[in-house]
Amino acid sequence: MVTEALPDSRSVTTGFWVGVGARDEAPAVAGASHFLEHLLFKGTDSRSAAQIAEAVDAVGGEMNAFTAQECTAYYTRLPAGQLVLGLDILCDVLWAPAFRLPEIEAERQVILEEIAMEEDTPDDRVITLLGEALFPGHPLGREVLGTRESIGAMTRENIVGFHDEWYRPANLVVAVAGAITHDEVVDGVSRRLAGIEGGAPPTREAPSAPPRPLDALKRRTEQAHLAIGVRALAKGDPDRAALAVANVVLGGGMSSRLFQSIREERGLAYSVYSYPASYSDCGALVIYAGTAPARLAEVHGLIQLELDRLLADGITDSELRVAKGYLEGSTVLGLEDSGGCMSRIGKAVLVHGDVIEVDEVLARYRAITRADVQRAIERVLGPGERTVAVVSPQSKKQVEATLRG
Image 1 (spheres, rainbow, N blue to C red):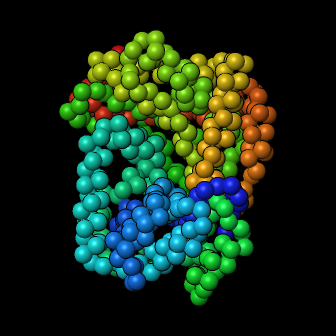
Image 2 (image 1 turned 180 degrees about the vertical axis):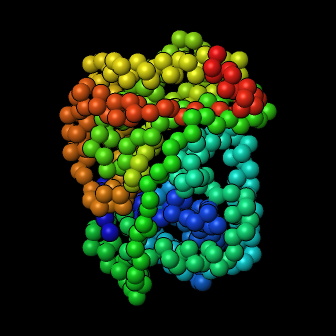
């Protein structure tokens, strides 16, 4: 349990972070974590879904959840003074879900529609395609939603078994931020979870198969959606902050090289960006751009050129200054409310087992040098071939020919 006291805050955000996600699922139950995320707010032994929603609406609060590759998080953001309500609801939905068959079937259809929506959203679909190529045959390469087949075949027993195995106190971080004290949170959680024991974090295996160089999917789209990726750094890697600086320079903001070169100077794309993703034992650096199919080769060439330039020449002093300022400022701005504070401390304890003070985080950013950034760039961009994924009106053979020029 981790808390951050914000005495002047007018809200309290309570988050339950379960240390299991999409990468921890067997193929037969792919999507189980996300299925549970949907189901747990559908009702408990003592509350219906409507009663849960009414309790939150009655105080003007919000309640939500999300599923990631390595965790599933549930949270409430309520007015200050409503800690008890938040703990009541979250403890109830996580440890006494009803799993009523009609609700399972209703949510199954909702998730199948969500999968269909992802398939009809090419800028999402190309990122999934890139993941499959970057991590072939590994759960990290699967869509968090699961597949039509796995969701369609998942039984109540499968779902209950997955819940009972992983939703245990030893695999849980409770994070609360707001006008609260640590002792009242500890007391409130301990009383509500008394008698619930056991559990352990999942055991994970790092990807071992090499990435595929290219995957392409033919769709009737107005744009060609291009994603380029390389394997990158794990969550605990000491060079991760330096890679974050490199990413800001590459495609992480409006002043980035990719945004300026591809959108501002040439008008080749509306959306172009990059981001790093980190997991417990590996990571990825991803670049995305959407462009006219006739300009695919040009945009692909410009991205590869910027990656080559970044690897060969590194970044400038001016770029280092801007990127560090961007990271420092976004860190501070993300902590303006109890929700941002709760998210920071919850993720920190779940991943690292401890919370680094904000001032220390900012000091680490300020201490990054060009040499640090260059080392991170060389570690990520230097070793191997980049993986390319494309969703466009062209077949895979046509895409291969287009990119070869």
